[in-house]
Length: 322
Image (cartoon, rainbow, N blue to C red; front, side, top):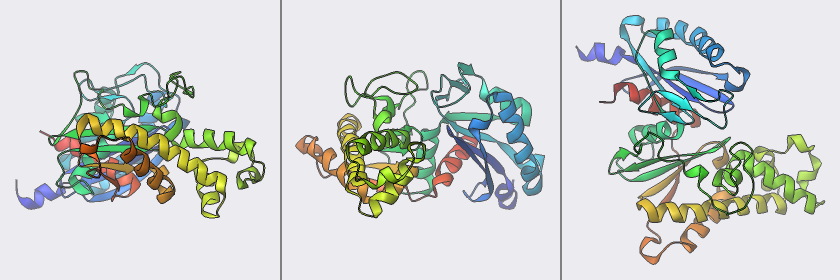
């Protein structure tokens, strides 16, 4: 195959989130030729979701490469099993139980489909095209609707024996703490550090402080974006919401560092838009809880890739993975 032909080979990268799904056509150079999105939570039936995705994507495939140059589909999804091609018991999706997603996609699109955890896909994308280029040991933490993670050790993704390694968001950071809205566990990192968890913290704190700007909003409107806007305007309670969230993150990160000794922890997702409001307390509490041999060695780094692109690029890389 000539180099010109190789540059025409295209894969579809799909990032399935609890609220939104993002997709893009990617070539061998890691260029996203075209991308789009659809609402995950508008499709209670997985068959309807796949049909909607097909109708959006097929015109793009035919426009950019035709069937001959379309190599396959890579998917990042919550609770995706790399070995079996299934989404299993995903707490933030409507589709319950074990969903044979890769098999359903292969039948619909008539090309091979591989999948992995959405945060694993983001980690792959960051390692190939972003802030983790050249790193062989790092942890990717995605802070969105939930808290996901991808662990790279010795240059390889850690899948574990069953394909589900790396659920750091569900590790317990406060035993007997806040009950998770979906899993029922008490005190998990996701219950505090996700966008959902930040909104819960903000709603609790604003009740105790009537003067907070957060009380200018109806309860259903209080989300992590609103907390950030109020923090920027100097609202001390909103700043405290991020400080508290950062403390929980930092304490958890100390445990993660002592487990795998990464070069860096990469932060990715909508919550990181809060910048130093969340980064400074996270770094402070991580360092405070580390053994001396680990201190001041691990960088906390914001993703260099566009929020949508890292997961799309990483998912598409699964297609060409050997």
